[in-house]
Length: 420
Image (cartoon, rainbow, N blue to C red; front, side):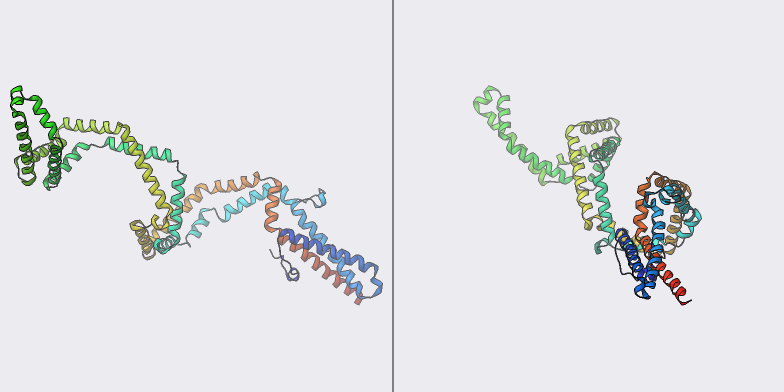
């Protein structure tokens, strides 16, 4: 608005609409006071006639502009004069006009396509992504905040139920038997089962050593009265324990021991049965389902989900971790590629332009309708306050300009009258 002319700028005032209203009103009152004063003392000196003419015309100009400015928003002095309170009376038409303006100048496919053609979306995205997270860029902070807000906003119970349900469903649908058979066969072929056998042998030796009294008791109970009377039961128990210890020791020292070979043969048969035997597959599936139905398994899944969610929240709230590592590096590489590859950049820009045009064509009318209905839904006082708050300060400059310009015109007319 061109209301801030050189006349208004001559008045060194600053402030909001309310302050400017006081300045404009004060200037009008001052002109009225000067006019009344000079009217009674005009005969004292010819120059007072010029002052009186200036104040009189300034008062008229200020009053006229006060009326014009006030009439935009309300009835002057509360009097329902025709063609006043223009904005409240025409708010629906203003909303419709604004909606049509948006549609014709911003929300037509041709306009959007033309303006999108001048915007390098891919280049801007590439520059943004290249602002590496480990250099303190905006990407890591924005992504970290977004990820944390999204995780925090989700219902942990519902989300946890979905995650645990998905895990349970996938496990229930998983045919574990062939997988276990293949893993066992691969372990045997690569010799990775031998540490397991060594561990079993060591565990057997410790078990025997800690339970030799139990073996002696069993032999003593199973032996006849003659053997117990002669003490042969103790000798037999010692022989059994010594024999087992010797066997376990030989198995531990000799990788090619016969019993180890038998165990390996049994493992090989088990690997084949897990892959091919329907009965073995059914037994594994039954065991899998029984484990999944176990309350302990449910509690383990609950704990697993809570730990995972807490870890994700901790990582999301830490900008240095949210986009660190390979994910952050991949984003940086994508950004550099977008800046260096013109064909990729052109493809993405074309896609963005077509998407924007498609959205405009599909939803432009709804956006226009939303603007119109929103303005229609405002009460008269709301739209008056919003418009007056946006342009009220400049409108008070119109009153100041009117007062000053009116005074100068009155001064010029009085001068012409005197000189002629």
